[in-house]
Image: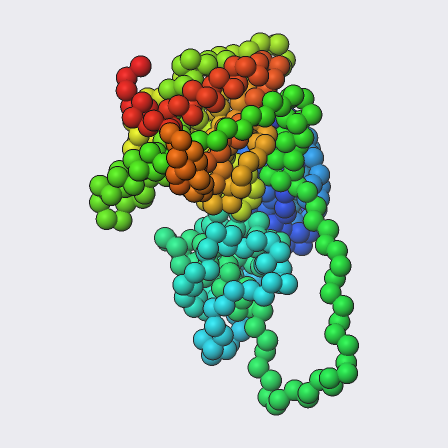
Length: 438
């Protein structure tokens, strides 16, 4: 009986260890070569590790949340059991075709496992069509994203039983939602159940839920803690009158072809920020703590803080200073969407020199954003609201918005931070100045 010991490989870029995020197999399972057996996370990215050979799983090393050094024994396979996958009988469908057709493609109940795993976060259940009947188990690798694989693992779903409706049969969020919802439907009874006595007390709901902090969420927590602990934040909030900016935005959107993505405030803010940073290069910088050096950048590599189903990510528009308004707006949309759908390339998630963050309509009055180390500044956008302001001695209703910024007070003095935000305010309140050559 031949055994194959597979060790955690070097995942590149100086990685010395990786965190186990979730196993896709367990001892006794039969896997084919290139089947994903485990998902791990390094300091750089989430990585799906495929099986190097076909065989039966004998043992695995590490539980979700464990840190495993490179070179550690990861999984042991019996390689002489490779033919078992081809001879194993197909798993029957979860429910008869008639029952599947009768079950509506509804959203899973709030208490179900898929709800706890945040399946389809981002509107994936809108207009869901009934899926085709599940197919027999195949040893081929299922086409889907790492996020969906993780949700399926947490929900106890075999993705080989889920019919994909995406390109080339790829499983998209709505497919997993519909499958879990269909599986959660109660089996029809042959006769009506007995009525429950009115006096029967309801079962008490669970009072607590423990969720292990692993993967991207652990990495976010670690970096946020380090940034807050090591960086003395100087917060500065300024009110802007963006009435003219809104007028310009509406005018530009009115000239767009039908169906085009409308212009938001963020590209205009980004363009103004790029202009202002020429006067305040100390805010477009990194602090290299190991060398004790401030690295100032002439190029602006703009980070766009983006909320995703897996947590906060900061995709980057590199060399944003070289892009005109519409190209900048398109690049910001593209990298944000790539981050939300786990399609961002590694270089699109690193290298930002200053970050913009926005809570959109939830922006509130003010916020205190945490600096995205090793950067030294971050600019936050709050909600735009109409307020009465005194203009030339008369009260007028104006559209206002607050900018909430944070600076690393070790390297950006309070006076310089306030001066930069005041210069940014001047640009945004008189938006024509954004486009005048410097």
